[in-house]
Length: 452
Image (cartoon, rainbow, N blue to C red; front, top):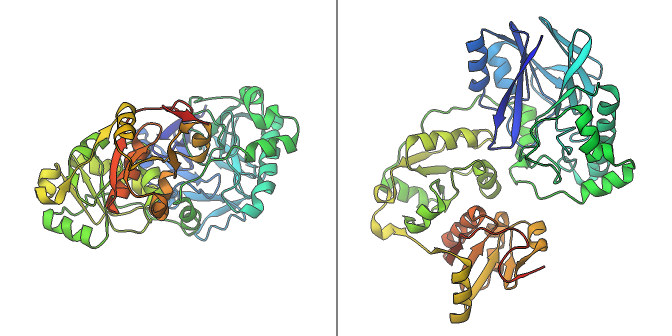
């Protein structure tokens, strides 16, 4: 009987899978840091025979080519997908067989035009289906990442693919998607708390299966799509041409003088510490993106993907963790790194700070000063649900390009939790603005002084 091992990648909201009969294994949608998969196979004494892609990914650099090269496995991609490296092109109905394992290819276009799912067949019965960006838990993969011209067509294909899976597969078939755990590749209605499901469960909760009319489904799906990170535009071409395994060796250490030179050259120097530590004391000209699961999304959204990058953190483990996260989206080999703290990175004259404060303090400032600018850096859908009555709206990922729209004055920056506001306030400060971080948790529609 086959066993499925799940590999979570919380920093991108994705999953990869290894399915095995105890002797051989197939890997589906591997992330780029392929050492996770080779280590698991080696520890279990497994030979990886196939590396399978459900689609050409738009939210991360695939580890498929590197894993196939490292193991001698066959690299499997749907025919017509545009992949330019050596692979086995598969079509609907094809079967991949290794040892006691059989994967049946099911065409499930929608998330991409050539998307496929892989049904695991055991003793003639489908037990699991690896659905990639097709049928997710309570949602489907978004259809708007290829082109505006194809979006409507792909949304309709997504509806048909979900219907096909629900019709052709047994009710107790486990649904095993790649996206849907925070990935921006999922449609906006996905519930990140749902971690498992079967075809029968999806038939009861998935809009692609509960909404009977295709037009109604498409209208609802397309009205519920949020912005996607800027780095996505680089992922498809990168995956079509193939990427090697990342070099995760430690970056070159930098001293204060070298750090000053990096800043003078316009390189991105990113401080990974918590926003409260950052606002209290940091090197002037650095950007704060906390080392959390959303690091690659937030940094990849605001930084040019090929920009020289220097990382600052408390310790080498934090640098290594950030490096692995960023390599998954193609931000490779930081040009430098430093650990310790601001006192080790720069003289006092090259360091600065600003307030991290609360809504109560904003209320006082609005009464005592006439130059306060309140800046909401959440997404448009959040802003529309409710915002501070004095707020100017500018999504955090647009701050660099639209900072000239922020009026003169002291800029108080907020989001829902403080993390995006920390990124945005540091970007504004790099441009010489006087900023205050509103580090006070709020929910859309629950902002003090709210109006919708």
